[in-house]
Amino acid sequence: MVLGGFVALYVFTSSQGSTEPRPGTAQSDEGREHVSTGKIVSYKNTVPTSGTHSVQPAAWGVSPTELPDEAIVHNMEHGGVVVSYRPDADKATVEKLTALLSKPFSNKNFLPTKVILMPRSGQESPILLASWRRTQELDKYDEQQIITYYTNNIGKSPEPRAS
Image 1 (cartoon, rainbow, N blue to C red):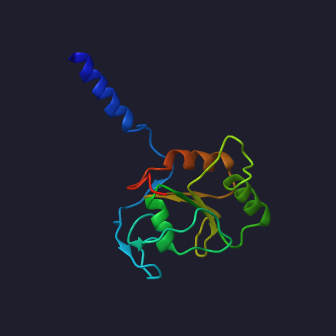
Image 2 (cartoon, rainbow, N blue to C red):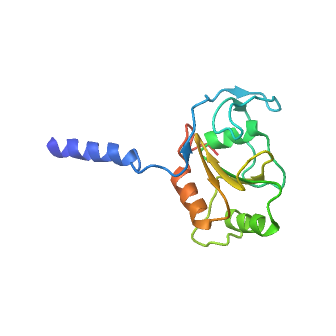
Image 3 (tube, rainbow, N blue to C red):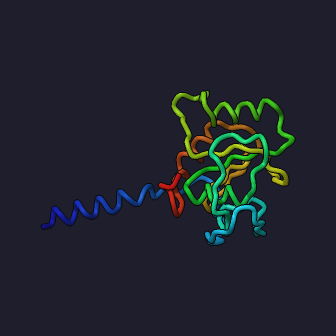
């Protein structure tokens, strides 16, 4: 009986994940209501990480153009990470980000699946990492920080198993 209690406690605590703080800055919970695709939503933050969003998420992968916040918030709700860069980013930075975050991956030990890479107008930092209710700003390309952010924030959302 006692052994069964210890096993149950171990399974419960193991399923709760690491107690170490996740990288990035916590953002407020703005909800997760759905609106029809194409409807414009006003967000409190320049880079929303929760809130009312489109019923249709964006496609995972690299986008050469800025995607609507209403779509990418849905991707974050599904446990994904959005990596954005200022449109004035130098070509070398965009090439490194693309090589790290899309096939063929430049790092054979890092194969991200739920990621969007896109330019974002109006963002202050050169590179911004965003996931459900978290953000991290980078002043320059830093592969290790991107990998650490991704691996510690992927799936930390209300619907992590959704595609």
